[in-house]
Amino acid sequence: MDAFSIGEAAERLALSPHTLRYYERAGLLDMVARNSAGRRVYTDADLHWISLLMCLRSSGMPIANMKKFSNLVRAGLSNVPDRIALLEQHRAKVVADMAALQSALTIIDGKLQRYRGISNENQIAR
Image (cartoon, rainbow, N blue to C red):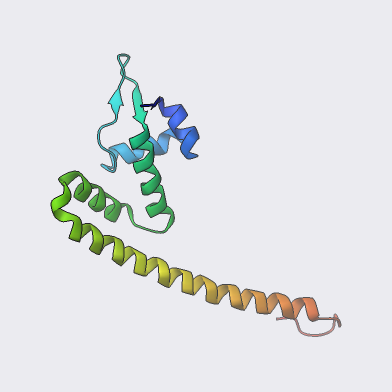
């Protein structure tokens, strides 16, 4: 089993050490193991879990829901239906966000096409 310092973990995850400490303080991580000098030691399992948290966060899940999900995972397998419900709710939001972004992209692409097609500087370019 590999072990990583906070700096190494942060580098592997492309996060700052500050973010890792915040995730721990916010209750998103189990207590990270410490070495004999009292420094945090992250395992592969920790990095895998943090990667999932990063995915949830980058897809717009609020920290409060991430904490709820983390607490459900910590509580054991008896609450898998609750985890599924939380993830399905988040998935629906991500799908809706993607649709909204696709609509915005279509509008932007249309505007770009129009601007690129303007050949007369006297035309109104809105």
